[in-house]
Image 1: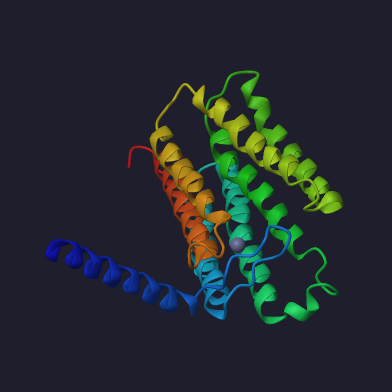
Image 2: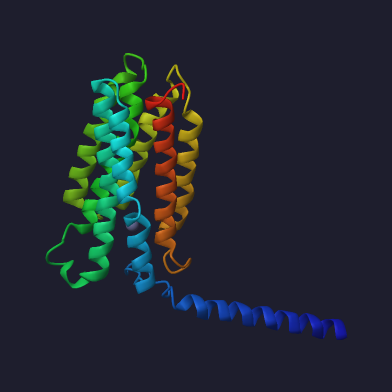
Length: 251
Ligand SMILES: [Zn+2]
């Protein structure tokens, strides 16, 4: 009997601490909403969303410039420009979008009808830009080398689609991202020189794990900001791989 009551007390105290943690989190997180409605972020979450990508704007601009100055021919220079633009473009547009969503919410309907659209377009160009240094600077087979320009055509098609049908067919859009992510990855896997593949895979893992937080608003506090951090870690790993294996080989 004594044992039973001690279990009961223990259970009660853990229930109380769970409730307390919910109360603590409730400052930072609002309740979950049905899928037809948009989750309402707390001010803390808005701030975290802006900060977790805003923080990377300067480093990504510096990072792109570093690759440009390390370039020894025009191919490397062009790849540094394209990659640097895609990388910093993602963080700049994401930060702008989240600032608009937070501070000028009432303007969103009128002045920024395509606010979400801008970030989706940035994602397409970011994916294309991330693969570009590998596709431009590594020895590829005669067929695989066409991926260099196909990936940009895919980004343009994806962006056009997002512009006209934005958020209407989410599954089509998701398939678009998967096709853009997986297509060039298959080409890169067939490279003769495999140095850097390990870092590329680690970067992919960051993106895939991060997606788990993408739709967890209202379940995990700061879910979207956590997703941002995973994106930043994936991008940083890919940057390291490009810097190490394509711009400073033998380093
Ligand atoms: Zn975001």
